[in-house]
Image (cartoon, rainbow, N blue to C red; front, side, top):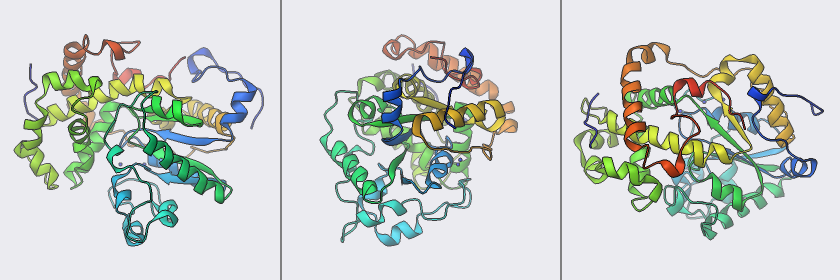
Length: 361
């Protein structure tokens, strides 16, 4: 069956938590001490308010915060590019005191590019598992960690290309792993709005990931229902690549890819992290916000305030598009359910309601 075409931010002591608000299992004192000294990994995908959370850590003088350490621009970045790579007017990112990639500036080679940057892993090996052999990535992260150490600061990695390979990071790096998630419909509407304003990068990322991982078993269900090479060559996708939003943009197929990857991230990403932050609840629920601040402090030893978190909810757009999302999500879950058995969720899919409740472990 084929899907027919149609229709970027954010006290120590004994505490008790109710079962429904418990984010992580109890951590022994030694493990907690180790986590509060190591690196901090913020895993997410695009337009999920991860920049907001990353920027909060960047405000601390004891943190050295790398923005998107697998960003493809790092392969060729120059000091001039770093100066110019700043939030665009419609990014809805927090105001930054320095360019996104400022922390990489001392690592730029004379001819451009960050030394040791594993360019092929920006989108390649996107579902790398625990025992995957990725020496270039390990060496690169070790180098970034040593660089932060020279300043006497802890490395914080704001990652948006790691949500499906948290297992590898967890098995091969020491530190705390935090996952940042957003309601999938709101996240996709944010991505769509960016495309309509001339920035189609995020809308095409799913296709780009698939094109770099044609032999990835985790993506086999998608390849069984989508003709990815043909989709890449379609007029609508070509127009998007030229930053033009065409009426024939294949939004159904693009949402199939997006939603499937969000389902996969529940198992391969969120389930492997020490903490999951739901930015929608962080915006609306003061109790949840306080408990999240407490858990971040407990895990990292860093006090972070999310008091000003206010993520756009797109209520008007979601009211008239609800039927489109509901029908397509059911179709995806039904059609791909059996094929996704190895990555099955504890509940039936990633519904909007599920995104409004915290993870209970």
